[in-house]
Amino acid sequence: MMHAFLVLLFGTSLVLAGCGEEKKAPPAQAPQQSGSAADAVQQEKEGYTTAVQKELDEIKLGIEALKADAKTASAESKAKLNEQVAMLDQKWQAAEKQFQELKTASAEAWRDMRAGMDSVLSELRQTFSNAKQSA
Image 1 (cartoon, rainbow, N blue to C red):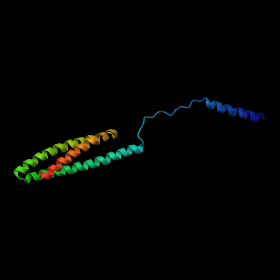
Image 2: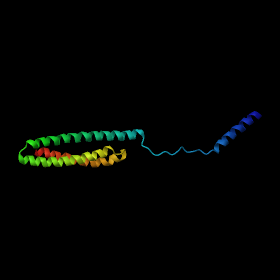
Image 3: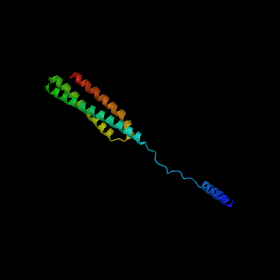
């Protein structure tokens, strides 16, 4: 009986000793995007930049074709085409500059920059389309 009393007393003291301990919170960590969310953003950025690069390359080839057409055009057409090509070159260079900035932007910043890139591309597309039609 004394043995049972000692075991009960010892068990109770262990339980009570554990109750007084203050539990420490795990160390605070800076909030981070989960791996899959960060990967998804990176994949979205890569897909977008690939598509933009392809479009810029295609428009550049089209500009070069317009330059070639201008060389063989009549004097009046040549002057008009050269003017349009100069404007296209200028807009293409601005789009290319903005694209390079977008490619090096952080995951958070590139989404904000995307709207501006879309706008510049839309304007470049329209200018190129107009130049092709008048060629």
